[in-house]
Image (cartoon, rainbow, N blue to C red):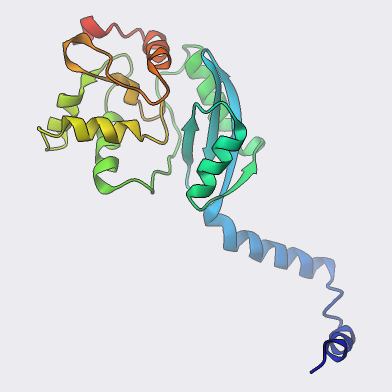
Length: 205
């Protein structure tokens, strides 16, 4: 069938001029189809500069210390997500982070979305999440807690890929002997977070 003839038939059926309710139904269906891959992001001011937050329908999926918005967007797209600049979608996250940085919050009450990690990585992050505010543990402690006492290096690598830093407090994990160890955002940020919580590494260990 020729295109012109098909267009005429569609016009007769009024399929090219959907009503408002039809448009809304179509839009709703489209949003539902893409709900699992939509991600909203926004940034907040921290004592050490800008921090980007991103959340899916499941929860917070990214806390990023990247300096550029484009870098964050690229990062999210590599996870096969559809990034959108957020606003009110991240009000709760921004409020709780602000309270934390001001020393008014000791525990985050936010769902997280860490589906992209391996089972081992998720196990390490779950163990790190159990370390209380104001305390710290060694990589060895975390390795022993998850049943892999000789996997300190693997534990460090897993923490280095923590997608939701601060909320899952990998900054509370340090090296033995009073050394800070590593941190994805840099040791200056790790020190700042520990200072917010009043952690003195030598005393804690």
